[in-house]
View (cartoon, helix red, strand yellow):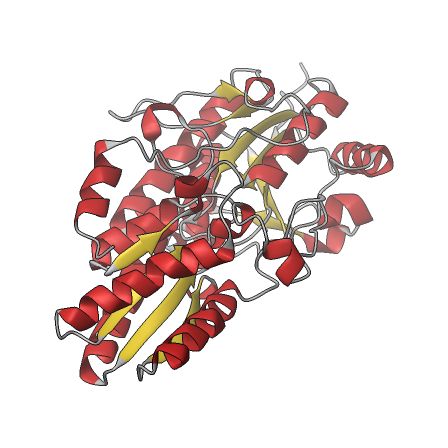
Length: 382
């Protein structure tokens, strides 16, 4: 009698880093090995599958991953390369998955990697079981029950510490205000989480200004008034936290600075310095008022992405990797793996999460009608 074929699991990471990636790799590898599978890690995301570079395919065993869940970064590195945009690339990925004899594929990533996973799942027509584990410090993927994306808690924790240090610095060396812009691409989850936890004097997110009528001058007026109120309180120092995603809601920003597009045709707001644009405008205003005020621009983002995960993310990611392997062994494919509050896994078909254009996932914006937002706003100086 012929022996049953040993199934092979491939794991890859796409997009920007997020704390906790190694926890998913660890738990998925251990669970797969314990279930009799062979596990390989694909270095640099989809690149080995697109380029046919099998030298970047690394066998993983329990000894390779047993203690990596406390480490930041990714032992498999990561890449923004993805096959979703072009049919020839999808064909190459499907072919190379077949040549590598990969039966199952776990992708770890954000919006772009999720879309690539969906396309690979469709292209392989069930021959390769595909499941996506969502990660992003932006917390902007539509997970059920408002569950966070992994990496968000760690990014908020590290960012809070940085903003608290800046608040203390401003107080120590007045008159001084810091204009801090955090990563977040389109949404304000990270900025609001950092600002609220740190007790920043003012936090502004794009969702407050939905409608497309807000101008840069409007944003600067809110900050200017906050600074003036603090001066009346004889406190000539402070910090304002602004979400990177604010740029998407400021109607005149594109006329003020060239906004580049990323490889998926989306505005890339990391390439221009919103913090410096706001700082320069505020400096002009206070110079005109004859008020001495040091205004300093600071961007926070890259410091957060590869930090060692806090216990929440270290635990959460292990649940996700474990559940992803068990899902694949059911014979299903094409899902985004989530964990519900209470600890139960809940796979969601990727097809149900796509917007009408079918080119990216739906976005979870910060809810400015929530009690949490009302609480945060009530403690701001504005």
